[in-house]
Amino acid sequence: MITFEHVTKMYGDNVGLEDVSIDIDEGDFVFLVGPSGAGKSTFIKLILKEIDADSGRITVGDYEVTSLSNREIPQLRRRIGIVFQDFRLLAKKTVFENVAFAMEILHKKKRVIRRRVPQVLELVGIEDMADRYPQELSAGEQQRVAIARAIINNPRVLIADEPTGNLDPITADGIMNLLDEINSNGTTVVMVTHAKDIVDKMNKRVVAIEDGHVVRDEFGQYGFHETNSSDENEGVFDDD
Image 1: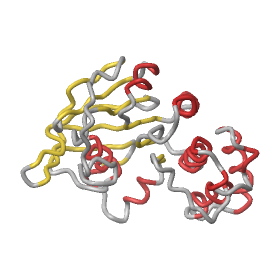
Image 2: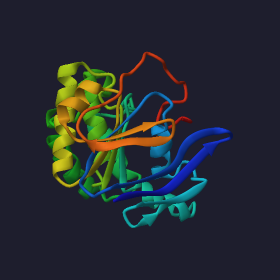
Image 3: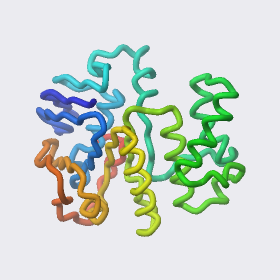
Image 4: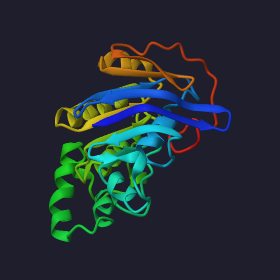
Protein backbone atom coordinates (compact mmCIF):
# COMPACT_ATOMS: atom_id res chain seq x y z
CA MET A 1 0.00 0.00 0.00
CA ILE A 2 2.78 2.46 0.97
CA THR A 3 6.37 1.82 -0.10
CA PHE A 4 9.50 3.89 0.43
CA GLU A 5 12.56 2.74 -1.51
CA HIS A 6 15.84 4.39 -0.45
CA VAL A 7 14.12 7.74 0.10
CA THR A 8 16.15 10.77 1.12
CA LYS A 9 14.91 14.28 1.83
CA MET A 10 17.28 17.03 2.95
CA TYR A 11 16.56 20.56 4.16
CA GLY A 12 19.83 22.21 3.23
CA ASP A 13 22.39 20.54 5.48
CA ASN A 14 19.70 19.09 7.76
CA VAL A 15 18.42 15.55 7.33
CA GLY A 16 14.66 15.06 6.97
CA LEU A 17 14.89 11.40 6.01
CA GLU A 18 17.96 9.54 4.79
CA ASP A 19 17.92 6.33 2.73
CA VAL A 20 14.62 5.13 4.21
CA SER A 21 13.09 1.92 2.87
CA ILE A 22 9.86 0.57 4.30
CA ASP A 23 6.70 -1.28 3.24
CA ILE A 24 3.29 -0.69 4.83
CA ASP A 25 0.86 -3.31 3.58
CA GLU A 26 -2.80 -2.80 2.88
CA GLY A 27 -4.75 -3.17 6.11
CA ASP A 28 -1.79 -2.45 8.39
CA PHE A 29 -2.12 -0.32 11.52
CA VAL A 30 1.18 1.49 12.05
CA PHE A 31 2.26 3.81 14.83
CA LEU A 32 4.88 6.30 13.66
CA VAL A 33 6.88 7.35 16.71
CA GLY A 34 10.08 9.14 17.63
CA PRO A 35 11.47 12.28 19.26
CA SER A 36 10.44 15.73 18.11
CA GLY A 37 12.17 16.64 14.87
CA ALA A 38 13.00 13.02 14.08
CA GLY A 39 11.47 13.00 10.60
CA LYS A 40 7.90 11.86 11.22
CA SER A 41 6.27 14.85 9.55
CA THR A 42 8.66 14.59 6.60
CA PHE A 43 7.51 10.99 6.19
CA ILE A 44 3.85 12.03 6.08
CA LYS A 45 4.44 15.02 3.80
CA LEU A 46 6.20 12.79 1.31
CA ILE A 47 3.23 10.41 1.25
CA LEU A 48 0.91 13.33 0.50
CA LYS A 49 3.42 14.83 -1.96
CA GLU A 50 3.43 18.10 -0.06
CA ILE A 51 7.19 17.96 -0.53
CA ASP A 52 9.37 16.07 -3.01
CA ALA A 53 12.04 13.52 -2.18
CA ASP A 54 15.57 14.32 -3.25
CA SER A 55 16.09 10.70 -4.22
CA GLY A 56 14.37 7.34 -3.99
CA ARG A 57 10.91 6.12 -4.94
CA ILE A 58 7.56 6.34 -3.10
CA THR A 59 4.37 4.51 -4.06
CA VAL A 60 0.94 4.74 -2.46
CA GLY A 61 -1.45 2.15 -3.85
CA ASP A 62 -1.36 2.48 -7.61
CA TYR A 63 0.33 5.89 -7.51
CA GLU A 64 4.04 6.40 -7.94
CA VAL A 65 4.11 9.52 -5.81
CA THR A 66 7.60 10.64 -6.72
CA SER A 67 6.65 11.02 -10.38
CA LEU A 68 3.14 12.48 -10.03
CA SER A 69 2.37 15.67 -11.92
CA ASN A 70 0.72 18.59 -10.11
CA ARG A 71 -2.51 17.75 -11.90
CA GLU A 72 -2.49 14.21 -10.49
CA ILE A 73 -1.79 15.12 -6.85
CA PRO A 74 -5.47 15.81 -5.95
CA GLN A 75 -6.36 12.31 -7.18
CA LEU A 76 -3.82 10.83 -4.77
CA ARG A 77 -5.04 12.89 -1.82
CA ARG A 78 -8.66 11.90 -2.38
CA ARG A 79 -7.63 8.37 -1.47
CA ILE A 80 -6.09 9.45 1.82
CA GLY A 81 -8.09 10.57 4.83
CA ILE A 82 -6.43 12.84 7.41
CA VAL A 83 -7.32 13.39 11.08
CA PHE A 84 -5.71 16.28 12.94
CA GLN A 85 -4.98 16.85 16.62
CA ASP A 86 -6.90 20.14 16.58
CA PHE A 87 -9.95 18.76 14.69
CA ARG A 88 -10.12 21.64 12.13
CA LEU A 89 -13.91 21.64 11.92
CA LEU A 90 -15.86 24.46 10.29
CA ALA A 91 -17.44 26.40 13.16
CA LYS A 92 -20.43 27.70 11.18
CA LYS A 93 -21.42 24.30 9.82
CA THR A 94 -23.30 21.57 11.66
CA VAL A 95 -21.86 18.11 12.23
CA PHE A 96 -23.76 16.86 9.17
CA GLU A 97 -22.54 19.78 7.07
CA ASN A 98 -18.92 19.36 8.20
CA VAL A 99 -18.89 15.75 7.12
CA ALA A 100 -20.91 16.37 3.96
CA PHE A 101 -18.46 19.08 2.92
CA ALA A 102 -15.80 16.45 2.20
CA MET A 103 -18.20 14.87 -0.31
CA GLU A 104 -19.38 18.16 -1.77
CA ILE A 105 -15.88 19.19 -2.82
CA LEU A 106 -15.77 15.98 -4.86
CA HIS A 107 -19.11 16.95 -6.45
CA LYS A 108 -21.02 13.97 -5.06
CA LYS A 109 -24.75 13.97 -5.71
CA LYS A 110 -26.96 15.32 -2.94
CA ARG A 111 -28.93 12.09 -2.63
CA VAL A 112 -25.69 10.16 -2.17
CA ILE A 113 -24.57 12.63 0.52
CA ARG A 114 -27.93 12.40 2.34
CA ARG A 115 -27.61 8.63 2.45
CA ARG A 116 -23.92 8.32 3.22
CA VAL A 117 -23.40 10.91 5.98
CA PRO A 118 -25.85 9.35 8.50
CA GLN A 119 -24.22 5.96 7.93
CA VAL A 120 -20.79 7.31 8.82
CA LEU A 121 -22.07 9.33 11.78
CA GLU A 122 -23.56 6.10 13.13
CA LEU A 123 -20.26 4.29 12.58
CA VAL A 124 -18.38 6.83 14.71
CA GLY A 125 -21.12 6.93 17.36
CA ILE A 126 -22.54 10.44 16.93
CA GLU A 127 -25.60 9.82 14.79
CA ASP A 128 -27.75 11.83 17.23
CA MET A 129 -25.55 14.95 16.91
CA ALA A 130 -25.98 15.70 13.22
CA ASP A 131 -27.64 19.09 13.82
CA ARG A 132 -25.20 20.36 16.44
CA TYR A 133 -22.35 22.79 15.85
CA PRO A 134 -18.72 22.07 16.83
CA GLN A 135 -18.83 24.44 19.82
CA GLU A 136 -21.69 22.41 21.25
CA LEU A 137 -19.59 19.23 21.32
CA SER A 138 -16.96 17.86 23.67
CA ALA A 139 -13.41 17.43 22.41
CA GLY A 140 -13.95 13.71 21.95
CA GLU A 141 -17.14 14.29 19.98
CA GLN A 142 -15.37 16.83 17.78
CA GLN A 143 -12.65 14.29 17.04
CA ARG A 144 -15.30 11.76 16.05
CA VAL A 145 -16.68 14.32 13.60
CA ALA A 146 -13.18 14.81 12.22
CA ILE A 147 -12.78 11.05 11.79
CA ALA A 148 -16.17 10.82 10.08
CA ARG A 149 -15.10 13.55 7.67
CA ALA A 150 -11.82 11.75 7.00
CA ILE A 151 -13.44 8.42 6.13
CA ILE A 152 -16.60 9.64 4.38
CA ASN A 153 -15.11 9.06 0.92
CA ASN A 154 -13.82 5.56 1.75
CA PRO A 155 -10.09 6.34 1.70
CA ARG A 156 -7.68 3.44 1.38
CA VAL A 157 -5.32 5.11 3.84
CA LEU A 158 -6.11 7.07 7.00
CA ILE A 159 -3.35 9.27 8.43
CA ALA A 160 -3.94 10.39 12.02
CA ASP A 161 -1.72 13.20 13.36
CA GLU A 162 -1.74 12.98 17.18
CA PRO A 163 -5.52 12.36 17.18
CA THR A 164 -5.63 11.85 20.96
CA GLY A 165 -3.30 14.73 21.84
CA ASN A 166 -6.08 17.01 23.13
CA LEU A 167 -8.15 14.30 24.79
CA ASP A 168 -8.39 12.87 28.30
CA PRO A 169 -7.37 9.20 28.70
CA ILE A 170 -10.88 7.75 28.71
CA THR A 171 -11.92 9.72 25.62
CA ALA A 172 -8.62 8.82 23.94
CA ASP A 173 -9.36 5.13 24.50
CA GLY A 174 -12.68 5.56 22.74
CA ILE A 175 -11.01 7.21 19.75
CA MET A 176 -8.42 4.44 19.55
CA ASN A 177 -11.14 1.80 19.63
CA LEU A 178 -12.81 3.62 16.74
CA LEU A 179 -9.59 3.77 14.72
CA ASP A 180 -9.04 0.08 15.42
CA GLU A 181 -12.55 -0.68 14.12
CA ILE A 182 -11.94 1.38 10.96
CA ASN A 183 -8.70 -0.52 10.44
CA SER A 184 -10.46 -3.87 10.93
CA ASN A 185 -12.77 -2.91 8.06
CA GLY A 186 -9.77 -2.77 5.72
CA THR A 187 -8.46 0.81 5.91
CA THR A 188 -4.72 1.19 6.33
CA VAL A 189 -4.02 3.43 9.34
CA VAL A 190 -0.80 5.38 9.95
CA MET A 191 -0.88 7.23 13.26
CA VAL A 192 1.75 9.76 14.35
CA THR A 193 1.89 9.90 18.13
CA HIS A 194 3.92 10.59 21.25
CA ALA A 195 1.37 8.73 23.42
CA LYS A 196 3.48 5.91 24.81
CA ASP A 197 0.61 4.51 26.89
CA ILE A 198 -1.61 4.14 23.82
CA VAL A 199 1.10 2.52 21.72
CA ASP A 200 1.97 0.06 24.47
CA LYS A 201 -1.68 -0.82 25.05
CA MET A 202 -2.59 -1.36 21.38
CA ASN A 203 0.33 -3.68 20.58
CA LYS A 204 0.37 -2.77 16.89
CA ARG A 205 3.24 -2.32 14.45
CA VAL A 206 5.59 0.44 15.60
CA VAL A 207 7.89 2.29 13.18
CA ALA A 208 10.37 4.39 15.13
CA ILE A 209 12.22 7.25 13.42
CA GLU A 210 15.22 9.04 14.86
CA ASP A 211 17.48 11.56 13.15
CA GLY A 212 15.85 10.82 9.80
CA HIS A 213 16.40 7.05 9.97
CA VAL A 214 14.05 4.15 10.72
CA VAL A 215 15.65 2.67 13.81
CA ARG A 216 12.98 0.11 14.68
CA ASP A 217 10.09 -1.59 12.88
CA GLU A 218 8.32 -4.26 14.87
CA PHE A 219 5.17 -5.12 16.77
CA GLY A 220 5.28 -4.07 20.37
CA GLN A 221 5.85 -1.04 22.51
CA TYR A 222 6.80 2.60 22.06
CA GLY A 223 10.46 2.19 22.87
CA PHE A 224 11.48 5.84 23.32
CA HIS A 225 11.98 7.80 26.52
CA GLU A 226 10.48 11.18 25.58
CA THR A 227 11.90 14.42 26.89
CA ASN A 228 9.94 17.60 27.32
CA SER A 229 11.79 19.26 24.45
CA SER A 230 9.67 20.59 21.63
CA ASP A 231 10.37 21.44 18.02
CA GLU A 232 8.52 24.27 16.37
CA ASN A 233 8.75 22.36 13.10
CA GLU A 234 7.22 19.13 14.38
CA GLY A 235 3.62 19.44 13.10
CA VAL A 236 2.70 17.16 10.23
CA PHE A 237 2.12 20.08 7.91
CA ASP A 238 5.12 22.08 9.04
CA ASP A 239 8.77 21.46 8.23
CA ASP A 240 10.42 18.68 10.22
